[in-house]
Length: 579
Image 1 (cartoon, rainbow, N blue to C red):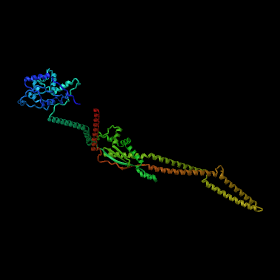
Image 2: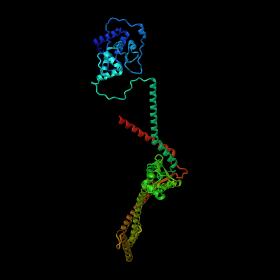
Image 3: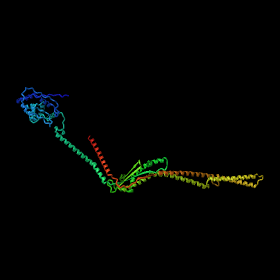
Image 4: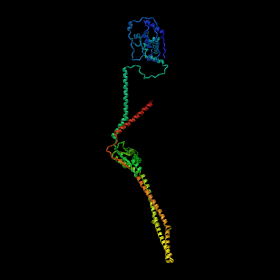
């Protein structure tokens, strides 16, 4: 949008009055030159320092007066050339024409007469500003020219930057809120190259000092939290720490080879000592060796607490004299290190002590404890298996003895060694007597065939026949019916058969029990675990701990990591709080 040009008017009475005074003093050139008009237009334009004055103005039209003779060339040559304003001050660029420069002679206040002031070719805007400045300083000029003259008489230049800004501020003071003066406003003066170089050098020196101060603070923090603790740790590990000797040993838990054949034996041989059973046993032994029970047993046998409570040990590794079992167990877990490799089935043990001899003694004692523990792992299982088989065998054996005694009792009580033998004997006797009976009957029949048989002979034969029949009946009665309250041969034979059958059954059961007992013994032998030493404990000749260099470097990494984490945390918190 094109700004509206405002026109201002100069009172003709003031101009006429000024011209009358000028005529009394001498000729006056009222027609301004082209250069003066251009400079007047430039003076009317707003300057960077006076942003409040934004209304452009047209230069005043010169008054039409009769031409007067121009000043001589001598006067023009005598007038000095105008001087350019100094560049060091950022003041409004109010340019003066050559005539004004000749009247002022280079003085910033210009002339003191109305003609001199009019000769300067001041614009209407400049005259109004001069009058407002005069009113501001308590002066009472009648015209704008009087205002300029009065101000210059008091040594005040109404056309300076400060005067114009004061007027603008006073004009807008009623419409603007009160402001607080700030001390951070940059200087309006334009600095020279030397000043700029000096300021840059000063800033660079401040930055360098600030950098040095930050580096010094960082170095101090690193020294306090990283370097000094690392140095103390190194001094302890290299000079103070008591040397410790470590004894290494390795053992494996093996299982007895199975006595049976077939697929089971092949599968067992395939897995060998690395089976699930031995793995569980190895883990159990490892747990036992790192338990409080093993520590207490080692203390009772070899004095574990007394060894690590010796005054020759440094403060950080020494166990107090009145240490509890928990403190001793914590030290025990540090000095006895046991690891198990499930892929190879090897248990590795490292025992640390202050002397090589004690280290070897502790390792040997722990190995004996481990061997006892291995033996006790399957002892109950083996005892249960053997006890059941043994009880069954003993019971079968007792039953066999019982059946045998019963057979003996029957034979003794019945007087029969063997029922079959007695029956066969009885049958043989009956058969013999029956044969004799048949012979006697044949002879009797032969005698009776005679017409006159012999009576004595007939009576003899008949008597023999009767006796034989009686004997046969008696023998048959003994086989089926007992005589004189005794059991019959059939009964005795039945009892003997039953007793002998029972004896045979008990004998078979005894044989089976014996086989079960043998199988249980084989299974118990297969369940036996053996602790086989792969590496025997040998006393070392050099100290293994402390590892001074490694521990010092590890301490440095730990302290540096802690410092870095704390620094990052503090930085994040500070950023959150400030944000």
